[in-house]
Length: 241
Ligand SMILES: C[S@@+](CC[C@H](N)C(=O)[O-])C[C@H]1O[C@@H](n2cnc3c(N)ncnc32)[C@H](O)[C@@H]1O
Image 1: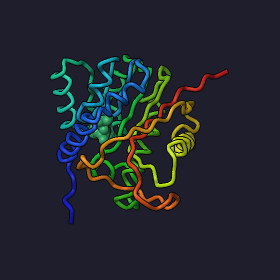
Image 2: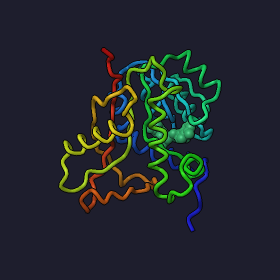
Image 3: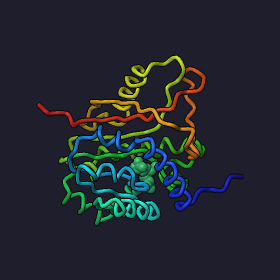
Image 4: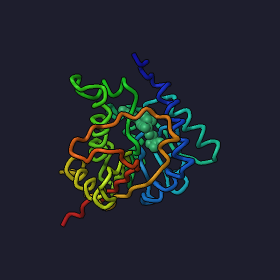
């Protein structure tokens, strides 16, 4: 049986994986897709995302993994870049996080590569799910929180989420973008007051990474090896008339 990943193991995997993304310039490319305004980052990870965002805007970040927060803080310090990082579980925001959000008045909320170690997945997803179903349900549950109080106060105008995916054989990039926009409108942004304004697909060198991805089986899509991509989804608050 495979040994279960602890929060520390997860931090070591994510340090390696996100360092590969950084080498492929993914974080610099993603931060260019996000408006340069006060940004609340959900999940600082090993700090590569926080670093690239904080170079050009104020950033308040939250994470519950102390090992990753340590890596992120060192990465920021080594680069002479400042961001505020708060330790809290986003499913049970601490009083400290709530008052920091209130003071910060974010204009943007970002959640890139949302996921966590098996203990978090178990705690926040229905017990009857199979292990390989949990990461997607966990991500969707976090995504729902990106567009609701208290993480998304009325000051927020933009929400940006990023995930890995694949372009199946015979499917065009335009079709994938259209499909993702429809899916996110239906599941994440429905009734949230936000609407998708931009979907981008970034190519990257997945073979170099060692992260143990759980592949979601999609019987609705053509069989064959998909081309890996990183999917960026930007949404704007709808203007009320
Ligand atoms: C896959 S990493 C991505 C990190 C970073 N956004 C990046 O792009 O490199 C997901 C991060 O979200 C954090 N996270 C997941 N679930 C969380 C929760 N319930 N509360 C706080 N942080 C959480 C994890 O600890 C991890 O640092």
